[in-house]
Amino acid sequence: MIALVRLAGRAASRSRVGIAAAAAPPPVGLSVQRRRAFQGVRMETGGSKGGRGALVVLEGLDRSGKTSQCARLLSFLKGKGYNAEGWRFPDRATSVGQMISSYLANDSQLDDRTIHLLFSANRWEKRALMESKLLSGTTLIVDRYSYSGVAFSAAKGLDIEWCKAPENGLIAPDLVIYLDVQPEKAAERGGYGGERYEKIEFQKKVAEHYHSLRDSTWKVTQFLQESPR
Ligand code: 2DT
Ligand code: MG
Image (cartoon, rainbow, N blue to C red; front, side, top):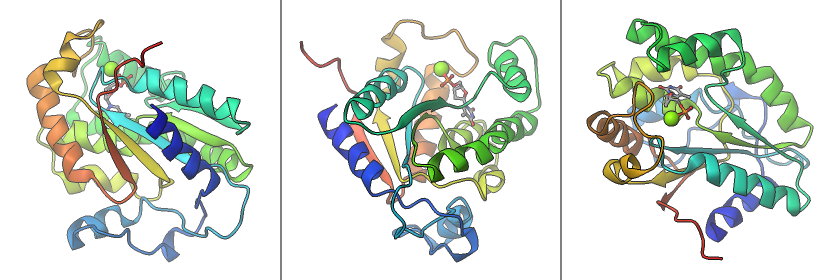
């Protein structure tokens, strides 16, 4: 947790969110194919203007501890005086989010590509607000983002490049923290199995796709136990 907080603090004070997608240099260390595919996800880089908030994303399998770590990180940053907010995707409060929620609860059926695009639309509908928050200095701690979108849909067998395409133009995170948990361990945690994707074999495929998406903004950390009191 301490390391995680340090990382996020660093991202918050050195945010490089900007607005020039077309001018963004390719991310360092990606293969040519991936660089091309994910280039458009980056808005940025600007960097010289101070006062912007950081976009910090937590990713991981279901029950990897993202939600608790997001909450702890948020309260830590607020305690340090950062202007910070917690967000999550899917945002189930919007009408698109309600369709997603009903699909995840197995109350409705949707074609794999259709639900993929709805998840992406759910990020797009929040993009303008996200941008204005970041530009006005608010750091956002976000529970899941584009990487969930790609990893979960690709795990169903959809072409990964097709999955990345609708993310093109969303705001690039300054830091992605991936909580690395074994799918079997995650399944032992309370509340597992309630939603559509919470099956060990499926989560193993999701983990493989997550690993293929890693880039220089990622920090991978082992499953975090509650710290001793
Ligand atoms: P939560 O368990 O975090 O509420 O997520 N998912 C999520 C996708 O398939 N695509 C996406 O773009 C996002 C953001 C991951 C609910 C599930 O939705 C999956 C788990
Ligand atoms: Mg879940």
